Image 1 (cartoon, one colour):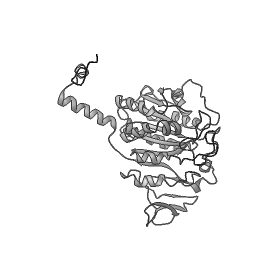
Image 2: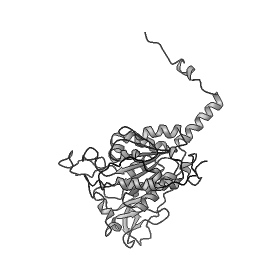
Image 3: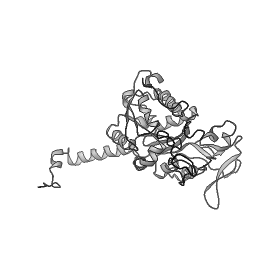
Image 4: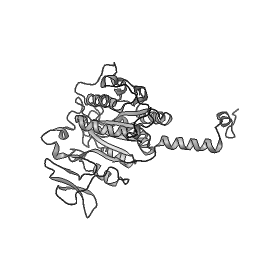
Length: 350
């Protein structure tokens, strides 16, 4: 039995007729994150919504790199692999391409994915491998005890930047859109409903889904996203993107995002401005989605958009690879590995 056709990202992945609960996806391993870490919320959310997918646990795989978030596979009662620094997308690519019957997830952090793993991440995105990538962003190196990371704001004082970071931070959403990712979203660890909604959509997408999760490190970077979580002020700075809806925010929707008629760039204006843009996550051209991703101030995070920025259909790497192999077999017949290894492009030394 295969997954429901309403979840194209899971097409071909065997389902189960057994009713499953969060407990079925919770391993017997002690969770070893610092008390209060945002990772707990993400773990609980994933364990909570996976039963709704109806997939057999033995057909789900979590691959991680190195970092606090990369302990994730130990806590899931599925298959998993704690791999090497920055290389989780590479390992997951091979797995997803060779085993289309698996639902493959990548768990990574802002340091793991965007520093040593940056090259591997962007190529997984541009290839559109059928993966769901969760990028935990706490804007700091947590496992190695508080050095600045590729997403730390300029001027950030840490153990490795005692006079303040000189670097401009990466914007993971902008990076993913620039790499032509077919599904790009951002959510927050403490907003359970929004987190569940975004992760469910990412799992349903066929192709590479990248979800940036703003996640608090209460030991080395506590309160980094407090401006987006404070109940009294968050509506003034948080822009919730909804497909097909005008991009407005504020307690009473008093702010809106419009296109500047002179420069063509997006800017914040009045919510009742008739030129407020309408969000289209399915637009083939990622220009507007990219412009939305650039609204947030990289230091204060004021005007931070969350939600699904882009969600478009494109053939996956695995599907194209299968078609290519089928064509080769059809036109040339089955391959001969021995003949290939002893072909004309070999030589003997000595």
